Image (tube, rainbow, N blue to C red):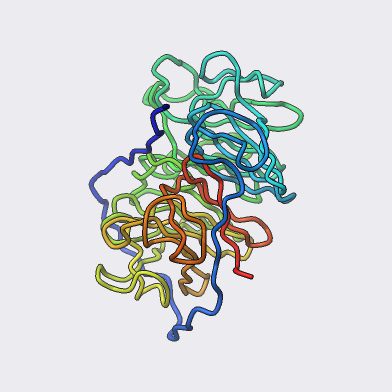
Length: 361
């Protein structure tokens, strides 16, 4: 039996920042909608196999991405491949599979070598943006991230003429996104790197924030329709339950949950303990979706945070395993990827399975 793929987080010292919390409304509505978890592809048998529904196999599925056509892209980290799932649950391989694993580009994406892809995002032109694991000890390239397109296959985005301080062999980022103006933003251990459409680098565009959760794997960095960035607040996401928001002008605010001991599922954000914020994503209405667990929330659960600061519980939190069902009846083994499509369907990568969270009928 193959060893289960595991994911490690780097625990670091917190960096203190002074800012105001996001405002939240004064009323707490009761939950009116139940949500149901269903498995749409994969099983608890890890491996590599294209197919439909349970016949598909993954080995360490991590980051997920939904495109406007309703397809879901999957970073299959253990297989060094990018997979695509159509709305009917059919899984195919769209990139990776070249000899070895590394940073070789190729116009034929199925001949390109990927190295443990861990984060996916969508560029403004429809290309996929791919971040990979940073242990490139055998590689000397200046690759910051990759792109996948129908015309150019896998292409490398290189750091042209980097400073001597740039560590080619150990470079790592927690994800890359692009805004409507064409700027790239990379979540790095020292801060946020901004790259203009002309290729001008600002390595520490925003500093004084704890980004050292960048070693985590999965959906860590999100950008909303206004161009604001969201990511777990480093070690604070474990100690306090906190999400950092960076506006397009570089100003910083925090989405802070309630203290340990407060309720765990829904209500005003200031009254809901977020536990350990592990993954997040944002939909086209600027709602945040969060996977949290840890000291306050023992088992993985999925919640939604509205732009007004209201928290809605979706599923999980009461046990571990592969159990489909409604709300707390559903159990997750270990969520490693999170995405939401244009219709509001939430997708999670749960080890060897791709599962959905939808309103109960």
